[in-house]
Length: 485
Image (cartoon, rainbow, N blue to C red; front, side, top):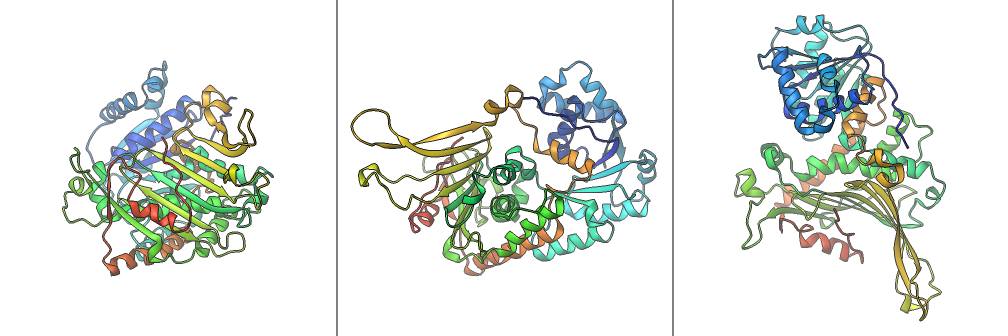
C-alpha cells in the first residue's frame, strides 16, 4: 500500500529560531522529508530567521550537516539535498529590534505565509506585533506557536489575548506534536470508522481506560525548563489531555476543525476535580549502589521537589463515561519508551466455564510509540485435550506489517502538522478556549499539592515508577498494564 501524496500550493514558511535545536532536529528535517516525497512545490520557500549574523551559505552548511546526521539515507538521494537548499534562505533578525524586517518582507510572495514561532514564549508577543507593524500579515497568513502555551491559566489567557490582538483565531496554530502521530489520528478512525467499537465505547461495557506515556530518558538539556514545569505541566496538561479527549469525545457531526475541537472541549469541561488521594507524584533517583544521575543531580538542585512522574485517576461526568475511571500516567527514566492507550473492557457478566477457567476480559491496546499499531486481546480455548482451558491471545495489527514495508517508518508528526498549516486545516491543532480549559482543570491540582507541601516519591531509574502508583490501582482492584518497548 503506497501513501498518496497530496500536493500543496506554493508557500512561504518563515521559521523564527531557525538555528535552534527544534528547527534543526524537527522542523527542517520534516520539510526535507516532504520535499523528497514531492510534496513541497518548486515555488515554495523556507526562510530561517535568527539573531546570528551569518550568510545564506553558512546557514546552508549548518542545516545540511543536521540533515546528513539525522536523515543520512535521504541526504544521499541524488539531487535531493541540493533541491531543498535552493528553497532555503536566511535572514539575520532580532525580534525585539526594528532592523531586518524590510529585508524579510521583500522575500515574501503573495500566497500562503506561515510564520513558525520556534522561540521562547516571551518573544511571541514581540513577533506578533512586529509582523503586523511591518505589513507582513495578509489574509492568508498563519502563525505556528510551540508549547508551552502558558504556565498556568492566567498566563495562558494573557498569551491568547496577545496573539488575538494581532491575528484571528483561524490564523493561530497551537502545535502539539502528539496530535500529528499517525496512531493518534487513528484513534478517531478506529472509533468512528468501525461499527464494531462505537456501540461498546461507554461505561456499560468499558471497565476503565489507561493512558501511559513513558520515557526512558531523563531531563537532559531541558533541565532548567523542566524543573520549573514538571511532568504535570510538561506532559499531563497537554499531551495526555489530548489523548484523553480523543479517546473519550463524542462523535463530531463531521470531520471538521471546529466540530472536532468542540467535542474535545466538552470532555475537558466535564472532567471532575481530582481528589488528593487519586494523585501520585514521583521523582527518579539512582538506586543504592547504582551508577548515573538522579533527577536532582541532573537539574543541579539537591532539594528540588519537582515531579518527573505523575499518575492520577480522572473521571468524566457525562452520560457516556459516568462511573468509568481514566488512569493517566507519565514519567521519565522509566523502564522503556512506550506510549499506549489500553481500553479495558468489563468481564462477561456470567462465565459458563466455571471458576477453574479463570477471569478473562478483552483489552484494546492502541500503541502510539514505538511499533505503532493496535492489538485486541480476545479469549480462546487453549489447544489440547483435558477440558476447557481458556487463554488470552492478541489479534495484532502492526502498521508496518499491515500497510506494507513503505510504512516501516511512518511520517514524523511535524511533517503532517506543517503541511496542515499550509493547507489551512486546524483539526489537529488546539484552540484557545481548549488550552484555557485544560489549564483550568490543571491549576487546582498543582495548587493542591503545593498547599499540602507534598514531596514526590522517589523511584529507581529503569523502573515502572513509584510503588504508590501501583497502590493507586490496587485500591480499586485493578493493575497497570506493563510498560513494554
